[in-house]
Image (cartoon, rainbow, N blue to C red):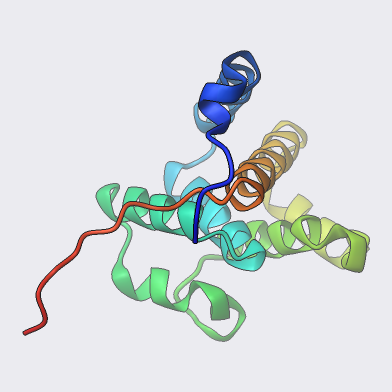
Length: 152
């Protein structure tokens, strides 16, 4: 895979605006662990290797377990996620796949059982932010860091 464009260099003001929005979403008051799960799950759905690499690394650094990261794509079948995390993950999937899902009432109602009005808006913002970053990374073919190691 070859990168198409360095979007940071091509339009630094646009990327700086996106970074500012990301920084707001990161510091909005929702649990850091929840935000990392949301970012990773949306990136999995979108197939964004760059973002999956980044957010699983960030999640690990913040104390997330390998087991929960490995099982994230099958969160519905695992007891490892709290009801609040499940509601956020369902909402993440619904909005990431909005052209297919149309944000079902059941997902919205479950999310609202666990998130206040303000938190619902902030969660939705984060879902939008990560989906936008996925589009930058996928569209311009950003390549995640690669460590080359010798085979054992």
